[in-house]
Length: 163
Image 1 (spheres, rainbow, N blue to C red):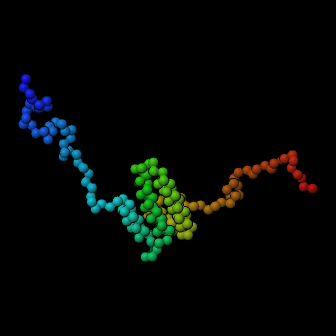
Image 2 (image 1 turned 45 degrees about the vertical axis):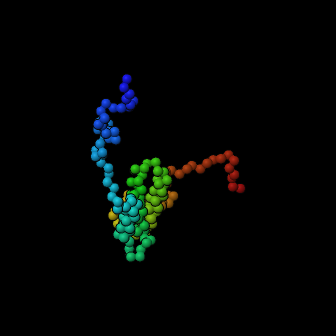
Image 3 (image 1 turned 60 degrees about the vertical axis):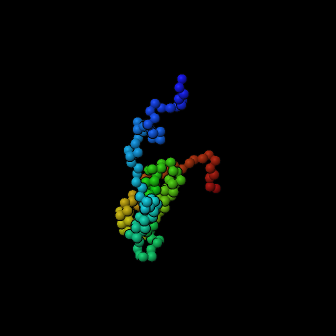
C-alpha cells in the first residue's frame, strides 16, 4: 500500500486559503451598509438648535429670557422631541414622567398668560399649534350647585334644641 497523507485531496491545484464560492450565503457587495455621515450631529444637538430658533421667534426683546411666550416656545419643542422619543421607546417611564411634568408646567404658564393678556395667549396657542383649554372662571357655590335641590335638614333624636 502506498502511503498517502490522510487529508490529501485528489486535486492538489486547489487553493486552500480561498473557500469555494458556493460556501458563501451572501457575497460581500450584496448587503448595503447604511452610510453614516461623519459630521452629522446627534439628535439632541438638532433639538437645541430648534429650541433656540423658536425662542428667538417668540421673544419680546433681545434680552428676553423669562416671558411666558419665550418659555412656552422652548417647552413645546422639548415636548415634541420627547413625544417622538417615547414613540420609539415606549417603556422609558422616567422620560414619560418628565414629559408629563413639562406638559403641566407649560399648561400653568399658558394659564398665567391667559390671565395676563388674552390676545397674546390666543396668538401663541394658534401659532404653536397647542391644544390648550383656556381656564374658566371659578364659580361660586350657588352658581355651581344652584340647579340641584337643597338637602333636607336632618332630624336627629339626640339633637339638642335651643333652650
